[in-house]
Structures are given as structure tokens and as C-alpha cells.
Image (cartoon, rainbow over all chains, first blue to last red; front, side, top):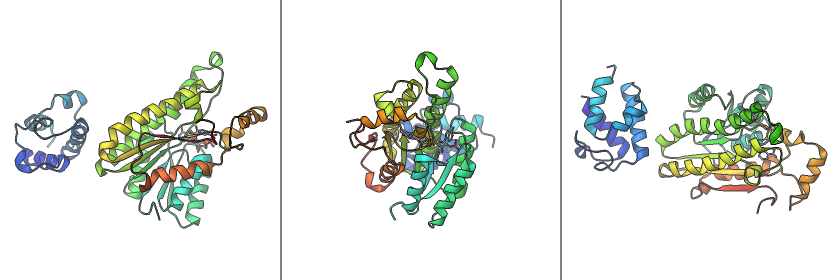
Length: 77
Length: 247
Ligand SMILES: NC(=O)c1ccc[n+]([C@@H]2O[C@H](COP(=O)([O-])OP(=O)(O)OC[C@H]3O[C@@H](n4cnc5c(N)ncnc54)[C@H](OP(=O)(O)O)[C@@H]3O)[C@@H](O)[C@H]2O)c1
């Protein structure tokens, strides 16, 4: 469930195909994101999951799996 | 019209250069949010002047140096207009004194309004513009930020800061199709310069090759161009509107 939502946001933000997005995909190396893309992605995730992701945590995120884990652990839903 | 369907926020638009910019952008077809911090009546007059010519405008109060007030202002603008395409950071003050007599309050007040205010508003605007993959940020600096001026070390620091800041964010935001430029006016006839003693005004005049003070419209026309699609390939630039003071 969370993965599908996250995948949709990534597809929309980064303009990649849904098939390319797996739990192991690295945002920068595999999905071609730049630093501004990642900031935007974090903003979109915060909006979608109604949560705040502090900068210290955002810096540790490098794969799609990291995001899914983080949301599972911190989301209010 | 060139800015038909666009929305603009002009800070410090109750008087002077900001007023001229707000009215001109509205003439070009934009919906305009007229920001002010204390001159409410003057801001309402600007809104009325725009409406009289068939434009759409609202007045929004906010001290640009106050982050909470800035965030509330952007929310109000979005609620009213649904979008923001153009930000003009024009609000500015002077607190002149020679360095050795300059009080910390004078330094802080000028840096807070003229530089932190630009950061506050640009940040809020960038969040909106990044998502839409387009936008125009136009910051009003000054000839003093480029050449310095005795008695204005605080103002010169803030206005030079605006130039560096603008170039940095021009690079950051370029991949999102957002253009950031600076207009550096020289000596423009407004309340700000009316406060200067006649001797200084005469002295200034001698340094202006075109031999006259500027009119707020001289600045507004350039801002109108930088806000339009005609300047899509221009970013990170400082455009001098000063009768040739800086060459
Ligand atoms: N005039 C010149 O020769 C000249 C030359 C170079 C650069 N500039 C720059 O051009 C800009 C406009 O100057 P101007 O001559 O038109 O000045 P002005 O006539 O004194 O008007 C200043 C405007 O800024 C607003 N303002 C001041 N502090 C503010 C704050 N904290 N938050 C929001 N708004 C605030 C004022 O609104 P309230 O009355 O409501 O406070 C007013 O609308 C300034 O950035 C100035 O530094 C002017």
C-alpha cells in the first residue's frame, strides 16, 4: 500500500516509469534524481502522508526502500 | 496582454517604486497582490487605481522580515488567486548613519527588511514555483549595493547581499524554469529620496550622465519585461536603471 503510493509520487516527481521503481532503486544513481528533485520529493511525501521529515532524516534516505521504511515507522496513518 | 492570466506579488507596493510596479504589471494583465507593512490607506488606493483600469488586485499586510507574516501572506494570495507566477521583492528601508555612529538597531532593521525579507519571500515563492516548473523572481537592489555610498554601509551590505543571493538562487532554480533577476535603480524620485537634503540631491544629479533623476516608471518598465515571457533566456542578471551612473 505505502509502496504503491510512494511509487506514484516518484513517477510523478521524477518522470520515470513505474517499472523502474523498486524498493532497491537508489534515487540519485538509479532514478536520476538531483538534489532539488529530492527536496521536492520529500515535500510531496510530507504532503501525501501528512508528516514532517526533518532534514537530518531526509539526508539518510537514499533508496525507495528507505522511504517506505521511514513512512511505516513515522506516519500517523 | 502580455501577463494575462498571471498572478504577481509585489512587496512594499503601497508607495514609490513598488506602487508603480504593481500598477504596471496590472496594466500588462496580471492579477496583483499589493503588499504593505503599515501604509494601509495607501495600499488600498493602489488597489483602487488598478481596479479603476479594469484590473484585479488585493492588498495584503505583512512585514516581510517576519516569517510568520510572510507565510500568512502567501496563503492569502494563493487562496485569492490560486497561483503565483511572479514575485517582486521591492520592500526596502534606509537608516543612514556613518559607520562609527551606526547603531546596531539601524544595522539590524535594514538587514532584516532588505535582505532577510527577500529570503523569506523568495523561499515561500520558490516552493510554489518549483512545483509548477515556471516562475519569475525579480529583486530590487540599488546602485548603492554595487558602488557603495558613504553613510549607507547597512543599506549597501543588504543590497549587495540581494545580488549575491539572487545569483545563487538563479542557479538553484534554473533547472525548474524559474528566472531570477535583479534591478538596481539609481536615484529615483520617491519618498525615500525626497527625505534627502537638497545639497545631497544636487550632488547626486552631477553623477548622473543622463542629467535627471529617475521616475518609478523607469524601473517598472524593466520589471514588466523581466516578468514577461520575453525574458525567458535571462537569469542571474543585474539590470541597472540609473541614468548611466554605473557603466
Ligand atoms: N528611491 C530610490 O532612489 C531607490 C534607489 C535604489 C533602490 N531603491 C529600492 O527600491 C525599493 C523601493 O524604494 P522606494 O523609493 O519606492 O521606497 P519608499 O517610497 O520608501 O517605499 C517603501 C515601500 O516599502 C514598504 N515597506 C517598508 N518596510 C517594509 C516591510 N518590513 N514589510 C513590507 N513592506 C515594507 C513600504 O510600505 P509601508 O509604508 O506600508 O511600510 C513602502 O511601500 C526599495 O527596496 C529601495 O531600497 C530605491
